[in-house]
Length: 208
Image (cartoon, rainbow, N blue to C red):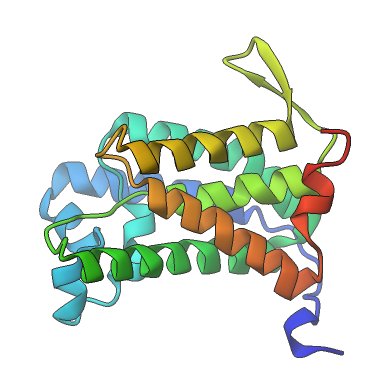
């Protein structure tokens, strides 16, 4: 069997809930010790000085309560379902791999463009990958945007991705790391291709 596609033994250990707890814990720590955010956020200058832990720690630090709330709400709504389908080990590998790679991609962009003062934080790159996984694994699921507008999961994910592409090109919401979001989505897509031999497009366009 291909090493890249060897499955893990299935277990459901509620890793998504543990990740939510860790994010909340780091946020509370930031409120008590504000420098934590500085050391945790991914900063090109910091990484070049050896602070390589930031490729992981940036995923658990958030700029404010609203940032944390929306990311954790998405992780709860979509991540718990994806974990139940994938299994906890697979889900954790998927979440961490896509988040770290999205951070690394962002670091390269900041490095090559000379944006050394940028501080990247938040789980959004991994969250976009989780949303892609949800739409791929549950293509018939219906999501109610704002609790009112019903959208099938693939339409929601493709719509969010189109908004991110538009925003990154036009510069709308320049304080938001649109490229990191898109990188998380892209690495999630690659993960499905490499790990499962499955092209998410086949699910996303099903009756879409």
